[in-house]
Length: 278
Image (cartoon, rainbow, N blue to C red; front, side, top):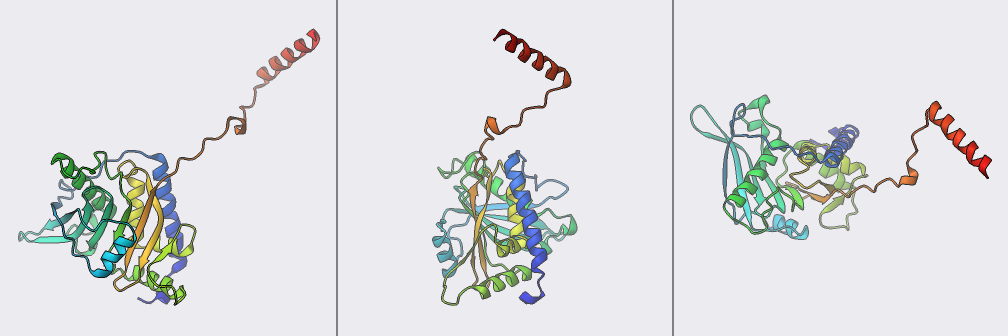
């Protein structure tokens, strides 16, 4: 798919809406438990395993290092269906850092999910994958930095091996606009049209929706920026930060409640009495 075939205006609008949903969820900060994906009606199977070393290419290693993310210490989380023949159909494989600091999204092919239209959203599957990794680490007395209350240490969510045609078209368009003399990954921030267009793609909105749907689990983290490695297939790093506490409204800035007619008459009488005593 070429960049000219993509409706960037619609993507930008969708990205803005998704961003607003994420911010609203982070502000509410409600606890929502991830779904029990192993139970009906979904009945996914999950395998957790020590993924070190993660099969990173040279460019992918450099991409993580430049983002300040660890190269080692990951659990592989393989979420799959079992066919009637007993074969594994595994559309989801992701790596969750045992300290909770990073998520590397590796293979996420919803079209291969045997649940079809009844499948879970990627955001729910990813949240359940993170939850299971942290639960396994805590139960087994694993990594010392594994947070007991969720993914509170999360710094970034990385989408590797992006093959979605709309997403790659956005990346190509953004890359084509940059000065040729500027090497390395691109950085986009909220407020930029290209940022919202990328957030509106399949590889962006799932991340934002997960953060908005499970704010307690991820310690009110929101997307602060995104770094893009345009090398085919592209990689996208959604950089996170904790939502800043909104300043309280000063007392003098709060409009007082209007007095009723009865209260106003009493106040006027008090004032008249005080004036007579002066």
